[in-house]
Length: 215
Ligand code: Z5A
Image 1 (spheres, rainbow, N blue to C red):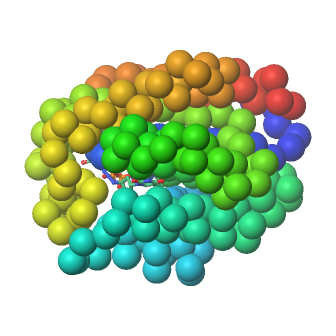
Image 2 (image 1 turned 120 degrees about the horizontal axis):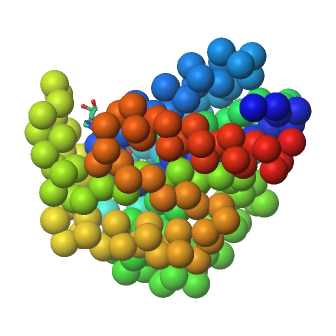
């Protein structure tokens, strides 16, 4: 891959789809080619964002859906201004674990908040910093739960969003697929149920294709 300018790649999908695993594999692949790579995540990626991450994931005692969506947007706005945009402008490849499509899928499709508002809020928070490529790692909620139970430190019980119902996670999945159908050029679907090696190859192919166009 020949890449002379920064690139912004986001990873989306349900819990345990393998986003973290594949971002790390991709970082190694790109670093071997001499690329400067920044790994970051949402919610989080900044001091403010990490504090908001703790609140949205672990707050006990109820949170209005309206509050939740604004906290994700606040984390994103700070992340774009202080981390993502400067890194892209300096020529880095930015790999971000979740971004604006998670808000569309979780707060829009699954929570049922007004989609026009979600779209406007996303546009406001990203301020033009739209991903060059989004890797949508598709996995059924049942498989996601199976993987979660298998990992060394299972998540979920103290996590507000992960402990939502199977129905909620089905709506999240459909929400992501809807985003992919409406923006097929940006969002590439990857079958995350395949082996780690197969998924990595598919991701590399998608990234090489985009890099060839953007160079
Ligand atoms: N959220 C939101 O609602 N709105 C928003 O706008 C944003 C986020 C930005 C963040 O959770 C939560 O915030 C999330 C959405 C919400 N809540 N939920 N659900 P997070 O960042 O803490 O967690 P996550 O994004 O859900 O990621 P995760 O649980 O860490 O999963 P992952 O990164 O996709 O997977 P992994 O850690 O790479 O792998 C998980 C396990 O599966 C591990 O044991 C691997 O070895 C295994 N694995 C990975 N790939 C494979 C394959 N191919 N086969 C078999 N096993 C595999």
